[in-house]
Image 1 (tube, rainbow, N blue to C red):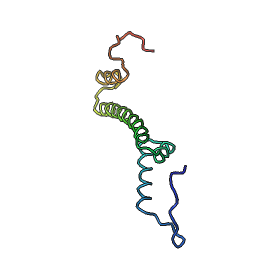
Image 2: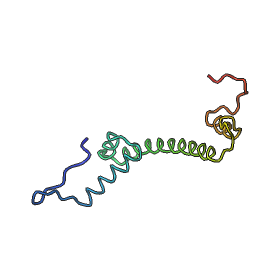
Image 3: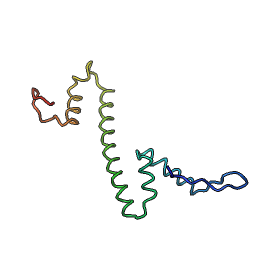
Image 4: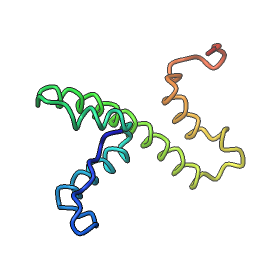
Length: 114
């Protein structure tokens, strides 16, 4: 993908520097944050600060969206771990949480949602 350049050889062995470590850790953290190798290459190779900022702002917005989804899922799971209902899908609190997440809170019970 062209993200890394090999270290120089000294006596037949590659010598990696702190800069290599920083570069590799940047790639690892970006990958863990959900960026594709193509996106990482784009960020690393962009020439202007404004363009880099724009690329990162788009990715940041996507991370924020994913964090919200993860938080909502976590809340549901936490409720289910504590819920005493035999059928959790019938638990009023669980149903409110799911309906709210699905945008169904203002619909009547007999309204078709499909």
